Length: 130
Image 1: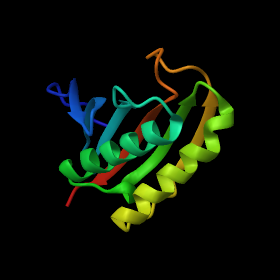
Image 2 (image 1 turned 135 degrees about the vertical axis):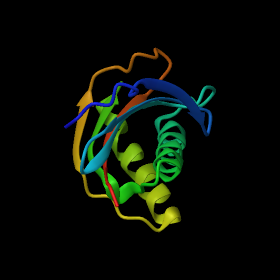
Image 3 (image 1 turned 30 degrees about the horizontal axis):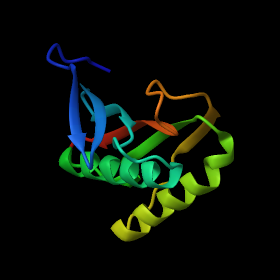
Image 4 (image 1 turned 180 degrees about the vertical axis):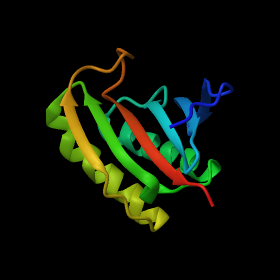
């Protein structure tokens, strides 16, 4: 992979979520790496997850991708008991967008950096060059 000298991380906002996005441009594809923190004010895992996955979908679309370009996803949870609610919210967002997503997923019980967050999601997407 050739790393472009102009690749840098930027922070963007989508659906009230804070996303730290980094792009790497290679000869065959652009790779996106980003972390998504939940919307402020959302207090339960389901609401936070719905906001996060909507923000992920919009970020991918803005970059020319979709959920099917995601190759890896890591979900950090404050409480692993919330995993059912997170999975359900994820599925509902994907169904509403009529998209498929079958990346390698790791779900880890490790509190997110934001103390008020129930979860944080890291995503790696691969967008082939035309």
